[in-house]
Length: 166
Image (cartoon, rainbow, N blue to C red):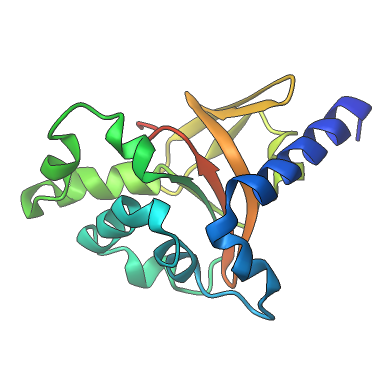
């Protein structure tokens, strides 16, 4: 690993500890809950959890996995145009919601040290998300990764500041 990548990894790990105090309790547990459990325990992911429920993905994201989830916060969802979230949560838009949410999921457990070495990642919905590293900033498409390597029993969560679109 190059010095730049080692430095970036150290910065990202520090950001994970500083930026996610509500998830810190999960770091001390012998075995964290599933991705859905970890997200549901954090008030910053209320919109994401509601969307996962509306899409019928709770069982999938609670299964053995492993999965890597690039999880947008409530603030990320708030950046979407007015009415977008409400529209996506309607039963008639379930397919669109599933496509959107599965674009945030990668099969396998991809830790921050691995993410910084990638140019792209194939998501569960089949589309490819671009990954760029500039200095100490890691982006997935247009979303900046703000916290990394939050453990779950069936994978890992990386927090992002923008909802990414397939």
